[in-house]
Image (cartoon, rainbow, N blue to C red; front, side):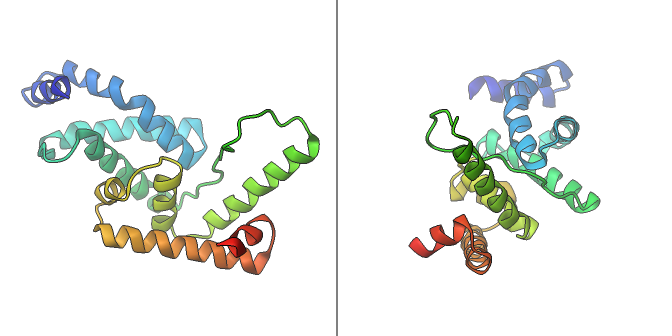
Length: 188
């Protein structure tokens, strides 16, 4: 934390090489997050580079109030959302991992797992971008409500409401279309 603060001050004082520390510290985390959203390695690399350019240009706006990690994620998420809106980019595929890590060699189990993932992807793709983003940040990135609120620059109550509405929409659609998630939605 102290090293980070020192590097930020060095960058603001004109030492461009100090920014390398920030890039090295956050590039893999940002890449993983953006890759999960785009599922396109080249697009994710491009967006990460653009995000770091934006972070460099806006570094003077960081006020040291919250964590730098939250601030840099907010800049990155906002940049990605802007790009998605401009290009009408759609998240094509989201990969989910089962909590059970045993190998699935049974062809029926492999098929069922893939079918479950496809159904979940369809449910996510039908959500508005802002709700989809909040779902991904909460359940894929496992961020807290407070962190999401900071990242997307929305009040905590709005984040909770959007998350609740998104899950409700997904449940309703699952009930209408049936399948694996219809069974899950009836249990809750």
